[in-house]
Length: 457
Image 1 (spheres, rainbow, N blue to C red):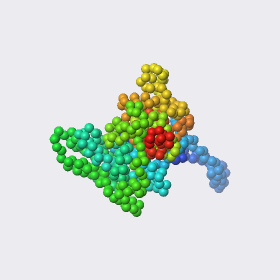
Image 2: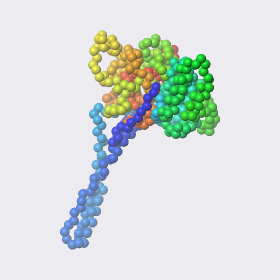
Image 3: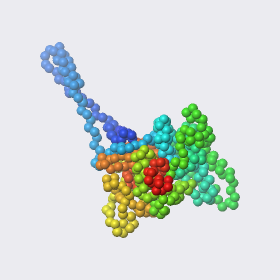
Image 4: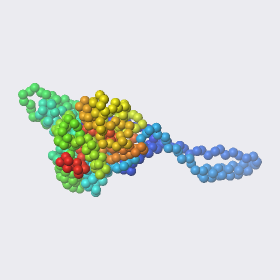
């Protein structure tokens, strides 16, 4: 999962948005000035009379102006068909982060999800104070990935990306750390945000030379060289640290402060090329640890996501964001993701139906599907098979909102900084989620009880 970007919108307005209470308001950046008082005229007569009359007129005009209410500036008219959202439910999340120039969305979204898990388990921990360290997770992951890359002679890829399983694996085997116990962001490169343009390519080239070497025997010293490159950028990962007056190791920090259990989490997806109800290794390059995912029927998959959010849970969301419907650059509904129905259906039984699977779609209500394609398991599979659906980006789904037409959307937290009109948050339609989700990681307890029983969770 590898994507980042940001650009301002609605520069002529100040945008205010509250993720907990819902609603979006636009306020003019330069409100109209108060109307100037009308000019005051003089009256003929003696000099003193003129002065007295002028003073009286000035006082009268001033009091009249003081009594006259100012005209209230009219609210700016939004472009026609602009979506206006009201929150249905928004589960607690931490502050927006910025992955900047790095392919680390998997780390930011995984930790955003785990931070929400911590808030749910520990009511005494504030969202304002909770901030897990991406550098710790990325450093541990790159070290392991380099080893896998060389052991497989380069067949297992080495790149900036990763998967949600990397965070679960790190939590289980190495622990986690709070922001501030590692040198980031004051690295020796001087970056205030991740910027891998100078750091990553030399390491990638070095590893490629080792992994694809035709030597009969390689010197294991390569590991020390690679670890040095990682430590030079992120700093060394701590083996112990103090936090809020107590001493922890990364593992004890997980168990004793965060109160998280790696065994509580499960990866879910829905594809037809593997049997439903069975675990399989999702075939994407960044699943280099070969983590397993449970394959569910599409309607069940959608139920887990929607009912989980309504019950107070969030989840890590991996999806394709390369579609035109993922509006991140232009348009009146920027930072809204949909699957526009741009062509009429040829109907069930047609050649179009044979290839696109226009049969009974995912269990999405008519109102929530308005103006969008009806998503079927066959459509999901075709997109995966022909590379139209790719493993682009990791995000967090944390809520549900409704537009002015009654259509519901998932609320998404991104890692591109305070980007767009909703300051880092997005709205994603249910058809888009049904169509373009690669996989999710969610707490097993968020899965409805009947589905836990059905799939043996």
